Image (cartoon, rainbow, N blue to C red; front, side, top):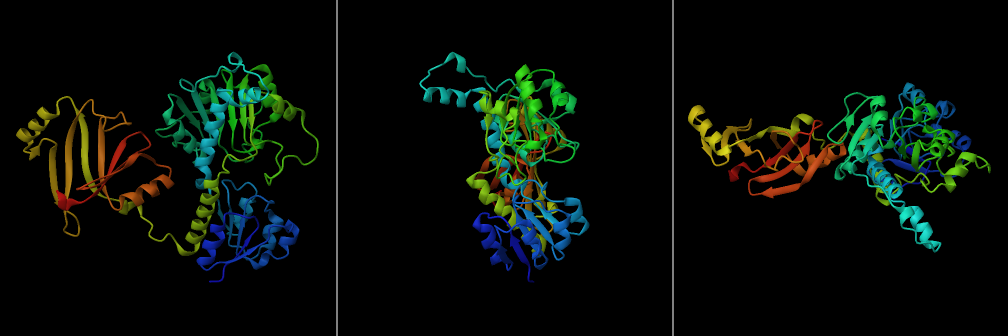
Length: 448
């Protein structure tokens, strides 16, 4: 298999090295123009790009042997996706790679704005010690609204779990809310939020979405954070709302004026009037499209791309299939007013062989191995089911607990606490989308 890949942008070296080790042939061209690359693109089966230029129909028509395009980033807006799909070209992106970085940056912007950290720092450096004018706000008690509940939105919502806040999400997909955010309609979100955070791609539907009409649909003044794409906000309308007090402040990692490559700001030397306002406003934080641009995400993005390219050609080695993850029911735990009396009742009337913990059922798996399932009532004030407030908790027997938890984190599942090891096996905990806590047990049945 001779798969030649053209790297159009520089990335973390592991991307190049691991592809080479896997048998792919790497070439790079970081300087040639789009037109110059079009003259040789027919020689390649793969492209690795960030955002140097747009891959349009003209480019794709000349890429007659192209099998995949891998963008080292979260979105694919620089690619004519529909036309690429019509040519059966696989499109690869890596939103999993920088979702944590974006979430932390978003939270940092909110806390900096609320506590006036940038303004206070600047004043002290200028010799001014102003305490009252820099009195801050607390995040606790606020309602946070997230528009776009994919990789980035979910990661941000998870970061908010340590705060006493209500988190609402709105997305065009249905039934994707989880224990970290309640999904509502756009109107429902606009009625309640104090802080709005955008985590949406740039599409025809989201282009200039945040305009005067959208802003005026909110019931009360609010703060806005944008770490998605600059063109999702009409800057002039944003500034007008800030001048009237409808928007209390803004954290903008992206701007309407960015070039498609994200590497520079303006197409010319003209500075728009709205941007001049943002530059002077104390209730604004601006960063140069770096929310997902950490040292850790630089490496993680590259690794995700490598893994997906290898998966395309070699499949997922050692992939744990869903039906292989859970091997049986490990236990069922529930809250009871008086566990001791309840255990005695089940022993007397149903004949369960009980002990102080409940009852243990013995059975054999398909291979004839001895296995166990536990039934146990817990006191109503138990904290073992936390953070779930439900009356029950399931325990599933699983294979290779630690690898499974890594897979679940990759899939966006909330993991609770750290793995605990005992003589009878390893234990880990997750939450399902309704907040039910699930105990995962990699058993050592011989110890029982």
